[in-house]
Image (tube, rainbow, N blue to C red; front, side, top):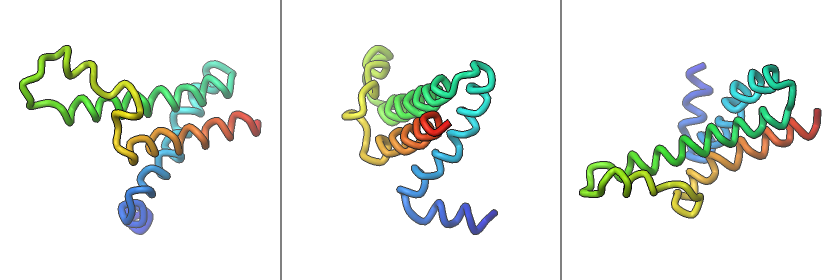
Amino acid sequence: MNAILNWIKGARWRQSLSHCVEGLLIQAPVTVLTRNLWFGALAVIVWYWSRKKLEVEIAGEGSDDTHVDEWTRGWFPWQWSAYQVLDVVMPAISSFAIAALF
C-alpha cells in the first residue's frame, strides 16, 4: 500500500488521477440508492466541485475580507488553479464514462 501511496504522491497529476478511484466510492452508493448511473456520476461532480470551492475559500481566509467576500470565491473553474480543475475533470470523465458504458 505504501508503494501505491508514494507513487500517487510522486506527481501532482497522479493525485488528480486518484480522484477517479475515490469517485467510485461516491458513485456506487448514489447509483444504488437512486438506481440511476447518471445521478451517481452527477454526485461525483457535485462532490469534487464543492471541495474545490471550499479549497479556494479556505485559501483566502486570514485576509481582511468579510464572510460575504469569502463566500463569493471559488464558484467557477477559472478561479481555480489548473490542478484544481484537473481534480474535478478527471473524476468527471471517469464517472460519466462508467455511466455511459453501463
